[in-house]
Length: 285
Image (tube, rainbow, N blue to C red; front, side, top):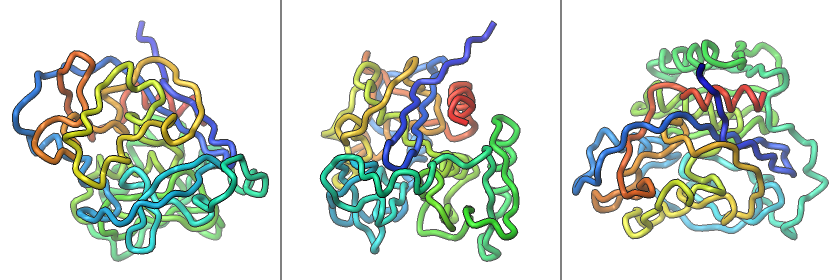
């Protein structure tokens, strides 16, 4: 009998945005390699503006202090998450009641309304990713007619998304290098998922090798407690999650940026939702 687990269910109080992380059986690990294989670098595609680190800025997310990057006038968090001006508005650090209830973060009734910009090439990336989500979770995607809250898939400089339902029109941006797997990942952000390696308890499972992280990308590896978030972790960190970085993601020198506690490495997974991803999103919605 297979046991399903999910690793993290956290409510970001101000926006009501949920953060889910999942757990599944750990993938087989490999020993540290001197040079990173390019197949392990797919998280590099998941940047709003590849190769641009912008300027570090301090703001607030859900009333808690957070550091993000300002790039081309946008607020970029964890590399591929776009925060709105309201989300990062400065305050006292306490939950701001005027923001409470503005949006639930979750999509009501687990239904995401969407459009696809006609200029977006290889639209099968989107339709295949949507089909995967619908085949494996309770989330449903419906083409938008007049609904006020919806996602538009459009051409972007990289792969990026807003986090959760922010209200009104929001975007999932896809450059030509964004695969179907990257699109599944970005839809995860739009549903309210953050990256698996930012769990509060991640230090129990992994080592973060900051000396090997590319300059300007350190924030991609900050855990939630460092960012001021609170939440509860359930189960084990999911090395197979589609929201998890691989060992060599954002490496500056071909050496690993993340290893398991025993020093072994693991591959990035951008093929499908893991068992834990499915259980987690089902618990969330």
